[in-house]
Image (tube, rainbow, N blue to C red; front, side):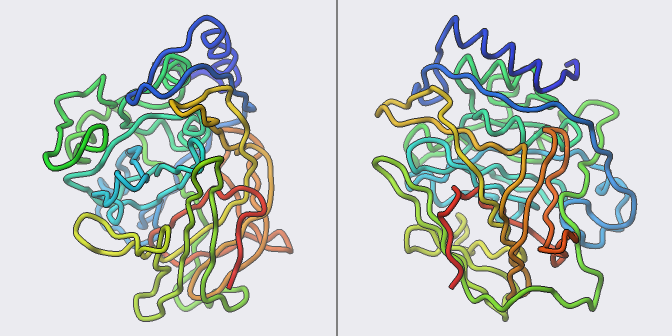
Length: 346
């Protein structure tokens, strides 16, 4: 696949949208356009740490491994998921109404199984673009969004390209029963694949976290018919932020609660893509090129600062009030792409 600028991809997709609608794996989408800004590619860092966690990684081959993105369902019928606690980074994105999905990034660990795998959205294009052409696993999408995926800087290992690496899991209703495994998908990496760049700045050993004490945070994804309510509570013994959703601990299929070392609440504007799901709800896209408010939670503290991403290719920077990078605890990180004004520290 040739690398093309995001701006040219999006222009092409707008022409596709004008001509056709198409269906995703759920048959829930109609027609859309989207926009983003071009930029420059970032390089993967050197060193003996894993780029996405900042943790020591002695295995040079593992450090150099390509990133794998898997789109996972996060609606009530899609939980509990498999593999979410093995991901290095998880980005929570609003998709339609008040429903969210998970953009999970694997590089350090593997997960077998991982799922339920669901469809791609236009927000994914800006998220994959800085990752050095990652593998992208998903369960189809509509014609307009497929045009974006086809032209994006990624390696397509979705269900339609790699169906042999997917299976339907018994005991779950469709479409919440499609699973894969990361080991099989990573084997599809093309020769010359590169590791992803570091997405965050990590504190050195013994360096204290900055910011103010924070016990918990609440965010909401509001829609016309659905509101997803998310809470994180600091657990000093576990060294992480325990996640709950809609009043229930968010656990994986093994019963382990999601407890990342770091949490980033990135306040973004969601725009109407022009698409509608089967219920008529707006299908959203997060505006990720630009800047805005960000709360970075680490080691029981919060730094209220800013996020900035000047181009689609740029890695998002998280800075404090003085403009200095915020240091995270080496480990896993969840990023909540929270609508502006929908968060509260408690």
